[in-house]
Image 1 (cartoon, rainbow, N blue to C red):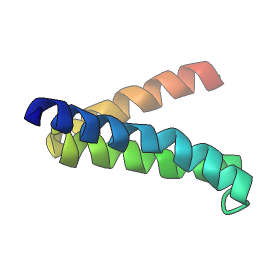
Image 2 (cartoon, one colour):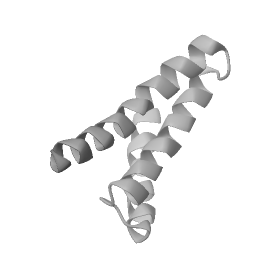
Image 3 (cartoon, one colour):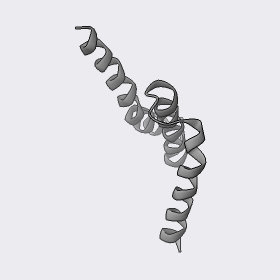
Image 4 (cartoon, rainbow, N blue to C red):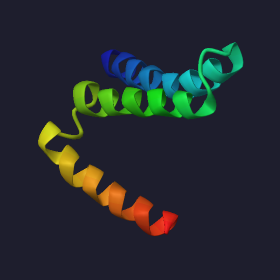
Length: 75
């Protein structure tokens, strides 16, 4: 039961992400772009602080890879 409770808490935290996106847009609090940016910050917080799947020192490499991919697609 303890493990099931832990898994449920982790799932609820992750499922807040779509609520941020849709809820922010529908309520008129955010534009779609702002909503996605806030969802990205929330997902980064969950990944680094709550789930501890990434370390802060990994972020520059990840951001660099993302920038390269985005620049190729944009070009």
